[in-house]
Image (cartoon, rainbow, N blue to C red; front, side, top):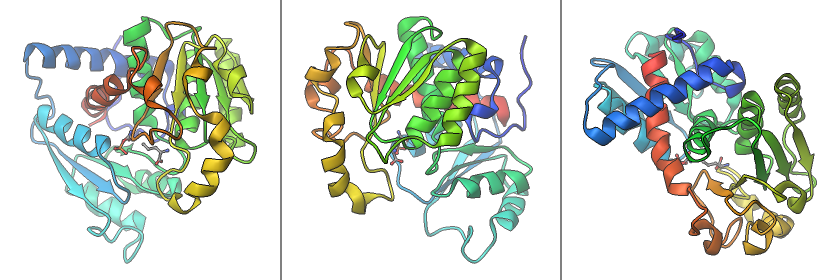
Length: 310
Ligand code: CP
Ligand code: NVA
């Protein structure tokens, strides 16, 4: 049965029900198949998506902008210096003004609280395109990609190796919601947020799956179906990059580490990758790697989200 998601915000995967998650995947699959056979689906004709970016982006910007265009609407890009947001105009006032012009807002910014505030005061749907805390559109896409490749999600083992950052957090939410066993291995001092781990443990208890936080990359990768990593220093942490390189060296995804995974494991990365740091070319360009399928699927999954909520 179709679930009405019109007007809903997408701030965190933890706010979605499992039925809503699978509905996004079903719509994404249809839209992707439509694209492959050239069938148009202009279900958002006349609608406008405002796209606010206070951090850089390749995939998010281009996939949202192309996606809204393919759905018959238009995307409007606002860069770091375009809006008064939070500087000379409050987030609450900006939200109410934008709601008078636009049909939806996609925002990528630093403080997660700004996105929550924007959604609170906007009367149109707000989609989180990455904050310091979460990256839900990426992880929904990653789960969709795994489903395409493995035909199932429940019961698979997902290993994330690296920084306990926005990606690790959305992975904890997403994998636990769909009943995958999720193992996060990070160095001491770089573990994921405790509240998010608690959320994931609650979801996993409901689904009968596992959440394991460890410092041992081999424990996480052992017999894994998915091996995932991300940059060691995220956007905004550039000054820490050198110090982090030393602390994370044991967490590099290389042929030595992935030999512990299942032979048909998928290598995944949200990109951009810092090749030679968190992953080496032998893994990123191997037959197990699906990094460019993930990048492509961002567009199909985000189109599904827009079509459902806008
Ligand atoms: N993965 C991802 O969100 O990429 P961009 O930073 O290029 O948008
Ligand atoms: N953790 C990375 C993800 C980029 C898509 C960052 O926030 O920079």
